[in-house]
Image (cartoon, rainbow, N blue to C red; front, side, top):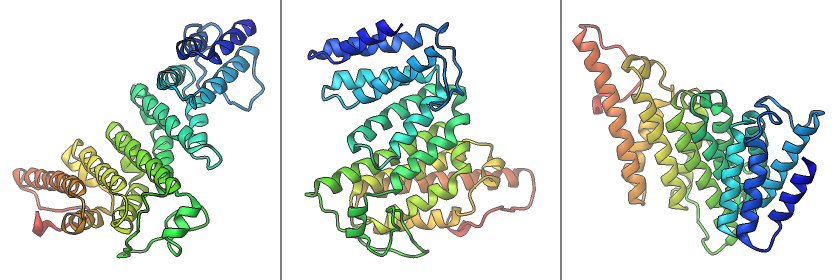
Length: 326
């Protein structure tokens, strides 16, 4: 086993991209195609004293993660697929490991972006297991979309962030942010946060119940982005508006009564925020996403009221909404 791993690791260091990709496939197959050596113990810990086969698994995973930084697209995409495939065998271990790297400020930003690709592929492959891991994944992506590089955060929001770059905002607060597109570090930071928000939106669409459980964090984050960054990058605001649309779509997909009873208490503020975006945001795509989200909210409320009318019951809502505008 050790001889094979060493042989395949040498292949991953070959100067020819196809050979490196072949080495990646060989390392992946050692885990995925050998269940007798790599039983699907999804609770395995990276820090525990492990049997030899488990040590090999950790060694292979570390090798594949390092290869995510390969400059050749074919090689790094092969690595993304390999890590996602291994996650079907060691799900908990892979999600914990990759989430830790994704949220680490010590890691290279490009590597973290590629780890985000692996995490999203894992999300799509989880299937019925997704509810078990959705909370952790949503928390990871919320962190990624909210945390900014300290130098960038201090330059643009000197009084609005804490020592880690997280937003500190109060209700009805807004401040335009100047986006310096010529600053590479700033552009990379915006790219990472936008990617995190896009990943969050996709996770919300696949796990709406988990999103509703974490709705406070999601709504706080999107509110900060859509108000405090109205004069900044449009990409992250588009992703934030799309995440709100997906959250409301998840609510609408439930039973009408459950949708209202499980709606976040901040739903009134959310509708106000979306209407403000429609009226004031300078980007057409943000406006359209906000309109789409409002239409979903309107349909959800009208269906709820119609159901109560059909049953002859009193129109009673569990949340406070602007029903006069619906």
